[in-house]
Structure formats: C-alpha cells, structure tokens
Image (tube, rainbow, N blue to C red):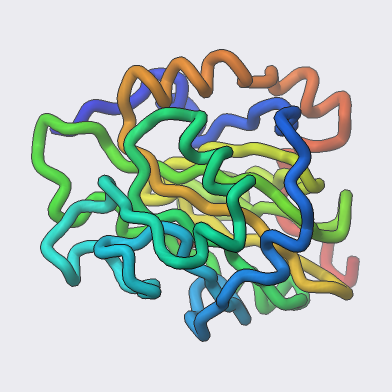
Amino acid sequence: MHYKLDILAEKGYVILGDYDGPSISSDEWESLEYMDWKSGGDTNFAPLASATGAMDCRGFWDHGKPDKYGIWTRNRHTAPGLVRYVEEIGGNYGRVRVIKLNPSDEAAALRQLHRDDNNRLNPDGSGWVVRSWLELDDSPGRSMFILREDRDDPATETRIRLHPGMQIVIDTERLWHVVWHPGPRPRYALITSWESDKVLGDWIALHAVSDQQLVHAGTLARTSLPAAGG
Ligand SMILES: [Fe+2]
C-alpha cells in the first residue's frame, strides 16, 4: 500500500488557482533544449530534471529509481523561473519536463488517451507518485484536458478547459488522460512528478478551487462525447 492524498481520492484530480508568483518569461520554455519523445500525441519534451541529471526522457526505472529524487539537467540554466517554481513547492519531485504539444483534432487526441506508469519501483509504504501541470502557453479556452476513469466509457469523462497559468494535479496512473489541443500554435506545459506527502498535500489544499467555482468560470465541464455530427 502506498500513502495517497485524501484530496485526490474522490475524483483523481484537483484544479488549483492560477499561478500568481513571479512572472516567468516565455523565453524560458521557448529556449529549452527539446528531445523527440512521443507521449500523448505529437510531442517533444525538454527534460528539466531526470533520473541522473542527463538529458533523458526515459522512465526513472531504467536507472533503478522510482519517479522521485529528480536531478536537474543542464536545461535548468535556461529556465530558472520554472526551476524555482518546482523548488518552492518544496516536495519530492521526480521527472520535471516541459511538454511541447503540437495541434491535433479531437478524434486523434482521444486515441491517445493513456495512463502513466508513475509508481514502478516505488516501494510499498511510501507516497504514491502523482503529477502536476503548470500551463504555460496554449490557446486559451480551447485546449482541454480529457480525463476518464474508464477509457472506453465517455460517461466517466471530465473535460477541463486550459489557460496559461493554470495549475492541476492529477493521479495519472489512475485516470486515463490526454490533452486535446486544436492549436494553431503549440501548447507548452510544465509537468512534474511528485511523491504524495504532507508538503504536496498542504500545497494542494492551500490552492484548491471548488468545482462550483470552476463550473461557473466555464473551466470545468462534465460531458459525454459531442452529439453525432456535432
Ligand atoms: Fe500521461
């Protein structure tokens, strides 16, 4: 058994209030060194922290490690604001990466629904690894996370509209997930693996926003698939 956060128990995700710390220039993510690595669509990834500090997008298990105790790569010098963002949360981070996602249509995105392998080699009794997102640049109000408890059952689906500055924590080993990004420009986001512990739980609890506020703001829509032809 792993330690899991109560705040993620019901839905498997929590939407937080927008990032309101020191502004982070788009130069940071646009100047990073990206690697050709496909996950969840037509993607490139810039590793900021990896298992060994090398520029490496592979799972930490390839190095005999669970997805925590990440080591900064040389990309850290290009993105000091993103590094500071992660360090200030203060928890035990593993993989830290910026994703660059090229546009797709909805059907292609849905074919990319997947679950992450976050907890391989993570010993029993330690904290379950989950992931956070900081949305950096996208098409505000058009890009969306699609989450499903059951891959083949749209009735279990939640759609979350994305905008820059948005912060989300997702148990991506539990929920099937993908971002549908219609473009036209690429979408960038900072993705960090975190061990569930008190530090992460406190950070989430401090910033969590209620579903009621999110539905009101148009961020959260529980939908099934659009009507045929729609
Ligand atoms: Fe994923």
